[in-house]
Amino acid sequence: MPGTLILCATPIGNLADASPRLAQTLATSDVIYCEDTRRSRVLLDSLGIKKRLNSYFVGNEGERQNQLAADLEADLTVALLTDAGIPAISDPGWSAVNAARRVGAQVTVVPGPSALTASLAVSGFPSERVVFEGFLPRRGRDREERLNQIAQETRTIVLFVGASQLLTDLEALARVAPDRPLCIARELTKKFEEVLWLTCAEALGVFAEREAKGEFTLVLSAVAQRTPDIESGIEGVLDAMAQGQSMTTAVRLVAADLGLPRRKLYETMLARTRDTTTGR
Image 1 (cartoon, one colour):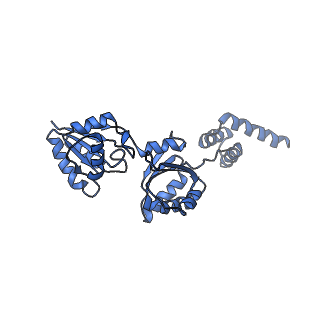
Image 2 (cartoon, one colour; image 1 turned 180 degrees about the horizontal axis):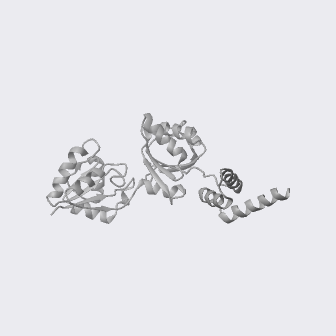
Image 3 (spheres, helix red, strand yellow; image 1 turned 135 degrees about the vertical axis):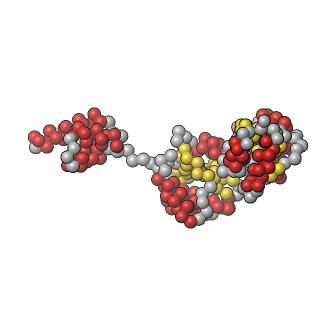
């Protein structure tokens, strides 16, 4: 019977955020794979765990997933770590899950720290509907298409940015959404933690004058949606009536399309019709 793959969330900065369950899982796992053996060794040392670590990163995951699958087929318990946060969230991990599913192994998770949710929480922006963009493409058509989508996005957006790419990405955001509110979360849970609330244009000005250091998560507010007014509804109804629709049908369709109260739109149209008929 195949073993179990455990995706383990690790501290995003402060090692004290490691949970007792994480420590227990790492201590009892048969095999541990990690994104960077040096960084994971620091975590294990802080937990008092002495175990061999196997690397599993973007450059070798194509090869290592076969080894991981073989470990699972041998009924071993395999723990997977990334440098910070949860595996498979803009980090290696999804290939390991696919490998585990391929051999019929159980997949579970030790939840915990995440830069995505931590930054979203401190931003204070609406979180009912959120889109996670991860790292933006570096160049080309894919980058421009993604930026154009962000410019029109009606949900709060979360992006990861490395220090070396921060100024370039801020320049792009300031170009497509200069006045949109932006929360910049830097080095969360670490000694030099910093949270800034600016517009995209203001953020570009700030970081054009200072060196970018550390890990950054950007939380961009949604584009402000224009609230349709009753006048827009009236114009829509008149256009529809000019094309042969009855007022009742036109009101129903326009109200649904614009999200306007149908009764209010209908009563307003009746009043306008009476005013036109009586010459008022």
